[in-house]
Image (cartoon, rainbow over all chains, first blue to last red; front, top):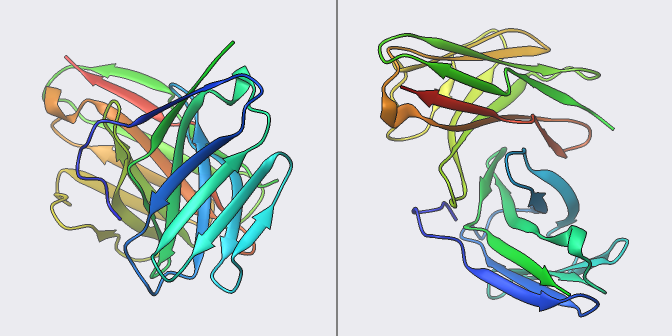
Length: 110
Length: 114
């Protein structure tokens, strides 16, 4: 759903471990979901997307899982690297506009 | 892939002046573009939907006289922050849907009003 001005939660992982970032969406009618990565001072960068007729989609080192029953989306990053450190947002396409979730800051430490 | 270019990347202006931010789709036509605002450590908040050849659609709570949007062509949308105040200082980001429905984002504009 729409952000209400909360500070970003932070996920800290060790380099090489897997990361799981979660997101709850608000509109049960949304049929398209996207994960974005945002580095400091830059615009969002597309990572992976999934449509509502799927429950899993895999990319390179990333997997998105969709649970429509509980309106939950997750992003799994395998073998997390320092370059993965950023803020990650999920977005839902409802009524032809993207609404962003609150976001999660991923910190990767050696 | 499709590219959205946003300009300027940074701007500092005095209170009371107006600032224009441009958003261009470089290799595709976008009948619809979106303007977002982002405060530090917060998510992107949709401000308005820019429609080519017609009036923009503003989200609730966004002052349309304060944030003027013009979408005069299929590749250009502009956001003008009028009579800027320090509380307008923020990161402004535009996006456009490419084909089929992937959204591409500009680099963002850091506005600082002093």
